[in-house]
Image (cartoon, rainbow, N blue to C red; front, side, top):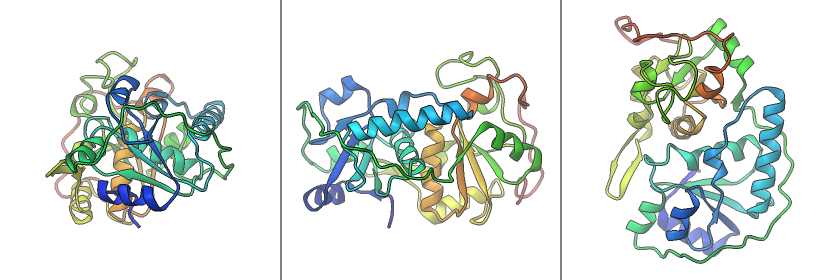
Length: 291
């Protein structure tokens, strides 16, 4: 079953199953209108994770508490949404990834986000939602998050395709982040990374941007030498755009996909870690770095 759910499908699901709808947008935007009953959890997008052991434990504890406060006990299906798939840096998908890492059993993402819901003529609300808190289930962590040490090992061994999905100015080293050129102390790329700007895996739909079809996504991946059997580690700035790409790749049948969740925000701040600077070198003829 697809993780993605269309607006009409979500409306139907809300009448037949226990669902907790989670709005990842900022509180002011949420207050202007949201899906009926949706709970606002903005930290899904804003939290900057580190992937040392203390950072991982903090991440687990923080989001278990937040999702429990939102009403997730393990029995409910969590459905996350943002405004549109190309305007929130993949924040709803970041929630999907975090819940998957925490082992939550039932997670969906509203395809097209709030704008698709509105375009479908479905009801919205401005009512304040007071969720009924639940005990978030303790589960083994999913094997989908790569820490800093694991990413460095992958750089050294070449055991996976390192996929950078940041915007072009970050990839070429003109900016260190989407928040300003000098937000981080270093600009550049993780050595050996391949690049597919995250927008490339989406296309215009009748009601706003949607994910490309599996065949289209696999074709885009082939341009950087990634096949369905290539192990892939995705990174961006803080794991949001990477989560958007992670979900798209999984939907397209790429079998082994993980995220370096600390991403450039963490990597660039450690001077001991290698960085590839300057304008990227031209790829060799044919598929770049074919696996």
